[in-house]
Length: 499
Image 1 (cartoon, one colour):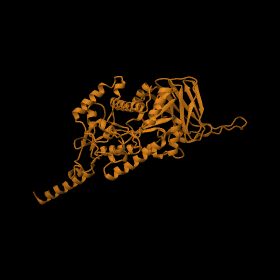
Image 2 (cartoon, helix red, strand yellow):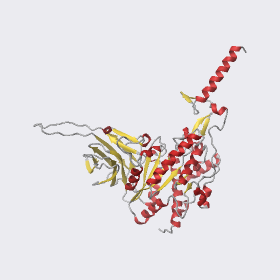
Image 3 (tube, rainbow, N blue to C red):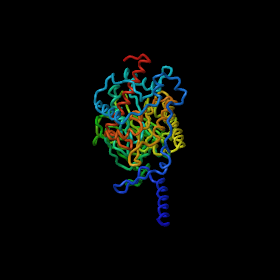
Image 4 (tube, helix red, strand yellow):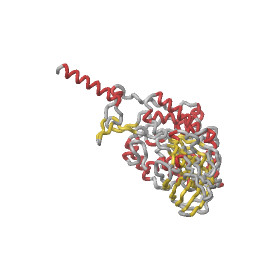
């Protein structure tokens, strides 16, 4: 081989190795062809980005809880693919069976430590007892998350299960516009609307609602026309308007509108066909108002007609007169950090006005691709510490339940593998939950641990990117409900409560 050939091969090798460091690990699609490099780091270290998980949470609380809860802090071995398939088949087969008290058995996936006869979920359970025994109105639960739950996915199943046991009805919170189709109702929007989401931060001159969303019609710009009568004496102002049409599966007479920063002449009119069935002024300039809309009759097809200068509209709710309600607050592509832009006192006041007693906080999937160093994990730990504290402080008479990140995979080296630091993020979320007196549901462990999403995908229960199918979401929601019911029964035993 001559000297020029050797130099060419060496130059090409250096170029290809250098390119492998920059090439996306999931590959690059060219038509139907996916070009994948062995990543440059992988040539030298197979464990470049993977950190060792601690077996126990390093917290003073772990030494002061009972042995049952202490054992849940021990790392559990992931099941084999074969045993996980068998488990998923069993869960799918039992999905449509009616639950009984015998189904509410201990779950190793829900950690709700009891200390001095009190657990993180006790305030929530006390509210459930009040509803179950004396019917004290509507008690709300806010389910917070990203695209995994948006549109009511998973929340809808939890709502049905809880309302079937404790009473209640309705679709709960309805955003006035969204980028996804809702599960439990349909919605069409007309007019020029602006949507503000927590993932983009606090809107200028206003706030986000308790669900991390806000809306204004006509982009917040008022249209003024000068009109004179024959004498030239009269002036009139014409305002822009925005309409939202909703089709509900059932009619509800209990409707509320959530808004803030109201202005004079701001009005909501509710129509069923051509008949006006309700009207309310939206003129209170407080940060948050939850106003009941008096409807003369209930209907399944209604139109919300907003007129006048636009306030910050946070959404509407449709409920029964009493019972438990689950509100879906899914914001696509969100890490949860945007909720820190809502003032702490404002969020507390919102929860108090709507009688929210539990926040289910389910984030993490969107940050997993970026957790490549110890520094990035440390940064996310600080962010989630602030998020969990924000919800905890906003619910002094309520509870917070943290649902861990689920398994998420990416295409690498000819196959799909979990992002390397998901388990580390799960342990961080668990540690922060326990230290901040929140309950914790280990969704990653329930799925089967590392690369379990591949088995879920093969069973048509999820996609490789971590999103569950409809059946997969129902399985997760039902497991969470059963675990919560076990803890609820344990609460009643500890406090000697009989139905």
